[in-house]
Length: 110
Length: 111
Image (cartoon, rainbow over all chains, first blue to last red):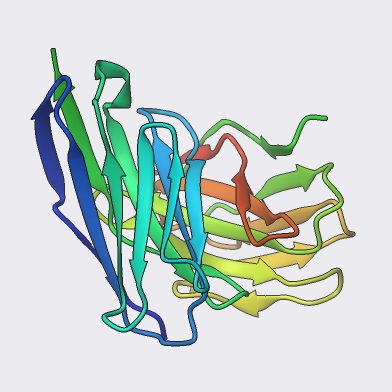
């Protein structure tokens, strides 16, 4: 089955800096790669996603890149703000179920 | 449009008791999912239902059963709860493009 590895497990940045979270996947059939943000005690919320026919996607301060050959994808957050502090999960899907990474706890300090 | 709803929000069970977690979605989605979330483990798939009338095991199905009652509802049953099933349970449904929408979660403690 699909195995998704996510790094780092914790990340601390200063407000205004950039944050990068990286994931690798094992199943070459995976074709959909979403990123979720989860605040403490809340449900995971989709923040951005990318499909296998696209190399990069941006939405304001958030961008995701995908390297299908190397089987890795990354989340980039620029100009971080304290409200970006949360746990971020990557996932990979072949169209049926999502396989999640173990999460990255991001702390943005003022 | 309530999205994905779950009941109950919190539950405490004694070892050996049974209970059913309820999930419903009003977005006319075909696929529905049950995950459990434990500290440091991310979200792990218990069961999913690709369409009404079908269910499939995920990564951690032991100790659970599911029922896809109709297109809207997908329930998760614990027949004999164990302390290892203490977790937060999330239901989700799939949009047309594959994006998943999660319910608010059920926090279950088994003593």
